[in-house]
Amino acid sequence: MSMNGIDITSWMSSPAFLDSFEGVQERLRLREAGIEQEQPARRVFERRDLEDPFSKKTPLSWLKSVVSEIDLGQKVFSKKRRKYHPVHLNKNDEIKAHFERLRWGIGSWLNHKWTSDVIASHCVGEETYYFAGASESYKPYSLVMIDVDCHNYGSLDGALSFLEHLREEYFLNLYFEPSTNGNGGHGYFLLDKEETSAQGIKPVLKQQFQQWLNQIAADFDVELAEVKGLPPELTWGTNQYELKSYKSGVLAKVPRGLVDRFDELRNTTVLTVSALRKLPVVQNPKKTAAANQLSSAVTGSFSGHHFSEEHLAGLKEGGRYHTVAKVLLSDDEMTTRSRAKVTVQDMAIVLMLGEFFTNNMNLDGSMPTARWKAMWNCLIEEGEIDRAWDHKRFKVLRDRLSSLGLIKWEDDTYTIGWKTSAGEYVPGRAAKWKFSAELMDKLATSVDLAIASVFEEEKKHPLWEQELLNWRSSLPVLPDNQTIRPTLVLRQPIYLYSPDELTDFVTPIMQLAA
Image 1 (cartoon, rainbow, N blue to C red):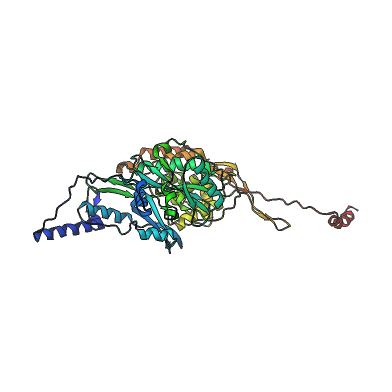
Image 2: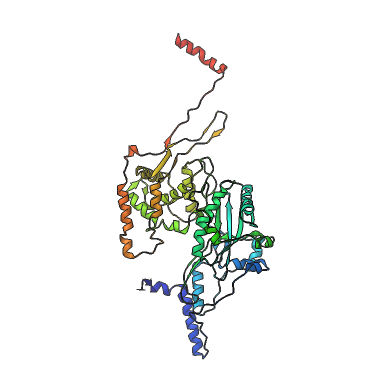
C-alpha cells in the first residue's frame, strides 16, 4: 500500500512511527484519566544564545561548543573486516527517530553523547573517539582536522615539518600533534562558519582547502593531507524538530592533548569560510591521496576513504560510472580466457579507480597493476564492493578501453624484476598510461541518477543517455592486432669476463678455426 510514492506499510513498521504511535497512545491514556498534557507549538523554533568557545573554561565544554552533539564516533574492532575502524555511534535511523519523537512532544535522548568519562578515556589512550564538525546554527565555530597521512610512504618528521611550516607561514598558533600510530600528524583549527550551512562548507574544505594543502605538502616527506571533521548535513522542515533528511559528517579523531594541552588547543588558529574561498583552486596537485612510491612496487595498505559516498553511489545502477560502463560494453558478452564473465559492475569499478588514479598519478607516470589490485582489495575489505579482484578481467576491460582510444599511452613497455649475479634485486618497471582526456570529461559530466533528482520518465530514456550512446558510436574501434596493450621487454644481461675466464674459450675456438 502506497500514498504519494511512500510505502505506508513500511513506514508504519519504522521505529519513528512506532515510537510516535506509543506517544499518541500515552497522551490518550492521560486524557482519559483527566490529565491534560500541554502540546508544544509546532511552528515556533527555540532560539539559543550563540556558543562562544573562547569563554569555555573546561575541555568538555569547549569541545561541545565546536563539534556536533549528535554525530560522534568510536574506534571498534570489526570481525568482518578483521581490524579496528571508526564507526558513527548514533546511527542515522536513531537520529531521525530521536527528532521525530521530539517533534511530537515526546521526551527523547540519544544513546551516545559527549561526557567527561568519554574525554578522560580518550585522552589517556584507553579508547579512541571521533568528532564531526558543528552543524548547529547556534555554534558559529566548527573544529576541523588536517590529517597528514604517511601510511604508504613518508615519515613522522616529514608530517610534523609540514604542520610546523603551516603554522609558521600561514596559520599562526595552529595546534598539532603526532598521530597515534606515530607515522603522521594531526593539525586542528577552528572554522568561522560565517552562517554557512554544512552543505556549503563541504566543497570549500574538500575541493579548495584540501587540494591547496596537498600542493604545499608536495615539498615534504608525506603521502597526503586530508581534511576531516566535516559537519553532518541536516535538512529541516517548517515545523520544529521536523528533520527531512540526515547525512552523517566525516569523522576526525579527537585531539589527544585536549586535557594536557588545553590552553594551546583553545588558542589554535581561526580561519573563515570567506578566506578559504579565496584560495586558488588546484586542478592537479603534485602529490595527492594515492601517490605511491617512486618505484612501481606497491606495498602497505590503502585507505578506502579516497572515495566519497557520491563516488560509491556512481557504481550503482543509474550512477555515472555504471551508466558509462554500460554504454562502453554495448551489451557485449565479454569473458576471459578462463570463461570468467566480465560484467558492467566490473567496468564501473575500473572507471572509478581509473579516474582516481589519473587524477593522482605516480610521480614517474607509471600505472602498475599492483596499485589497482591493492585499491580494489581495500574496497572489498571495506565492504564497498563485492566483485573480487581478477587480473584477467582487468586485462579484458583495460584492452577494451584501449581499443576505443580511451587510454593515453606514454610507454606501453614494462619489465619484470631480476637479480644480478651479486644477488642484488633490480625492480621492474610498469607501463605508463592513464585515461584519455575525452574519457575523463565524460565521467565528470555524466548525470548521476543515484544521487540526482529526476523524473521517473526521464530515467527510462533521458537525453543525456542518448548523448552517451551517440558518443560511443562515434568512437573508432581498433582491431585486436592493432590495440595497444602492455608489452614485456626482457632485460639482456651484460656479462663481463675477466681475462682468465676468457682464456678457457680460446683453445676450443682456435680448434674450430683450424
